[in-house]
Length: 369
Ligand code: MG
Image (cartoon, rainbow, N blue to C red; front, side):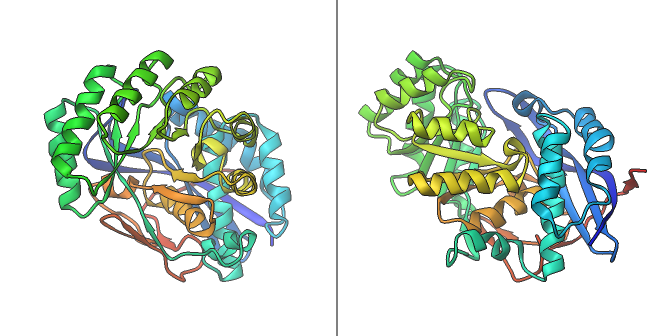
C-alpha cells in the first residue's frame, strides 16, 4: 500500500506547572504533528518536540528535515515494506532524530492500523508473550528550592503516584538535602529515582551519590550524573557507587547502547524515541538489552499523548523495559486528543484499538507538496 500524503501541523498545550531541569525551563508543549496517509485513506499520526538542548533539534530543523529530505524520500514507497521505508529514512539525512521519530511513529501507527492491531501487539511479536496492557509511570518533580520540591512530591503522592523522578544536578550538597527532605516527607514506600540531567562532574556525582547511600535514602537509581559526552566519567561513576546508574543523554543510537553495555559504563538504559529516531531503532536497542540482560526505561521528552503513547506501546511490548517515565500527558493541563491509551494518575492503560489508538488530532494540517 503506497504512502501517499504527508502533512504537518502544530499542537500547543499549556503545562500544569513549569517544567524545570538542570538544563531548561519550559511552560508549554509546542510540538510538530505529522500525519501520513496511504492511498486507501488510512491515517497515522506522529509527534516531535523541539528539545534543542538535548537532541539539537529545533522546530525549524525538524520541519526542514521532514519537508526537504524525509517526505520526498519515502513518499510513494510501499508501507508494507516497512523496514525498507525505515532504512530509506535513516539514510536520506543524518542525525535529526526527532524528525525521524515523528515520521517513524506515524508510520508504525499507520502500519498497525492497516493490520487492525494495537501497536503494542505488533511490537510484541519480537518478544512473544510479553504484551502488557497496564503500565505504571513515575512523575517528574522539577528542580526548585527544597521546600517547593517537597510540596510537589507530596502533591504527586496525593495524586496516587508511587514513583517519583526527582530532578537534581544543581549543586551536589544541596541535592543531597533535596532528596533527604523528600524522602522524609513521602516516607519509605515511595520509589525515588534521581535524575541529574548531566548536572554533576564525575567527582561531584560520586560524592553526592555516596552521601545519599550513607544516609540510606533508598534511591532506586541515578540517571545521567555527568555530561552525555563524558563516557569515561559515566563509567567511573558506575564503578564507584552501589546505586544503579541509568544512561540517558549518553545513549542516542544503537551503537551508543552497544558501547555502554559492552563496557558496563552504566547499569541501565533510558530509551527515548526522540533520541533513537523512533520505534524502529528503539526495538534494536531492546533486542540488544534483552540479549545482555540489561533493564531499560522508556522515557519521553516534553511530549503530548501521540508520541508518549507510542513509547507506552513499546514499553508494553518488551520484557527488557521494566521502568516507564511517560508522564508527558500528566504534565499537560488538557488532553486535546480522542482515543489512545488512558492516563489515569500513575497508570497507563492500553486498549485493543488499532495502531496507537488516537483518532482525533485537533490540528490544522498542511500537506507537503
Ligand atoms: Mg533524563
